[in-house]
Image 1 (tube, rainbow, N blue to C red):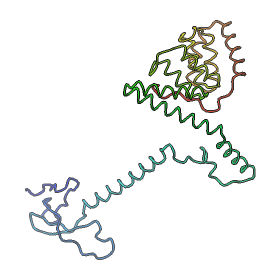
Image 2: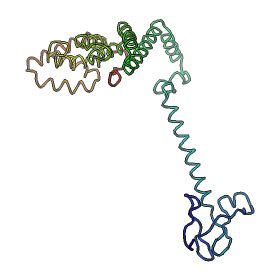
Image 3: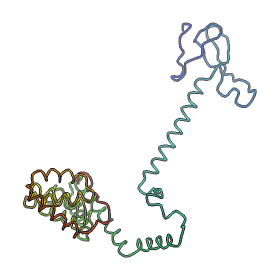
Image 4: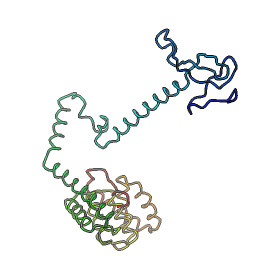
Length: 289
């Protein structure tokens, strides 16, 4: 090996240069430095030049790099673990996002509010709703499994559970059943049935059901094509926070005559007053379903 050549005994290490002959053909000595105090030789070691035979003290580059790498890996592992913990569905939310019950009570009124909420959560109606939502989740899981496995029996079981939840006025189940009918996934494609389920969700004040029903009227899918009714439902959905419905409504408005637009807005006003406000945020069915 020629003088000045880098010795690649470890891929992370570039050897120290010999202070006597300037050769890079050096190796780490097996002998250890005598400790003269705490931490004095923590990152230093003895090296021996293979060309001139001189021993000298220098920084232990490998130890430094491995220490830095270990610290970095520990830090990254800690951050990933913390992120995974917070990302779990059951992770505790901050107080401003639903963790207020963990805060100390400041007054009798706060205590009464919390007691009333806990009583409501434990009411028969709340338990029934939780059971219906669990029924929907199980039904969706079975439909997905049956669709992937091409298993008709599993598909039928899943659809039956979803239909049962929809019959119990669970909006998410009604939207999902309408979507399955519209796509013809796991059941016959049936546009009128899809429109009926969307309307049942819309009649409960759900903005997603209103928007989907409005689009059915816009193209005449499952219902008679009617741009006035399409505008009415899309207008109602936009008023309740559905942003996609707002852009669709504005496109429909351009094809209406002034008299049709006035009629549609009057119908929307009356319907807006008669329909209830949704008791939970509107949610689209899972992507692709």
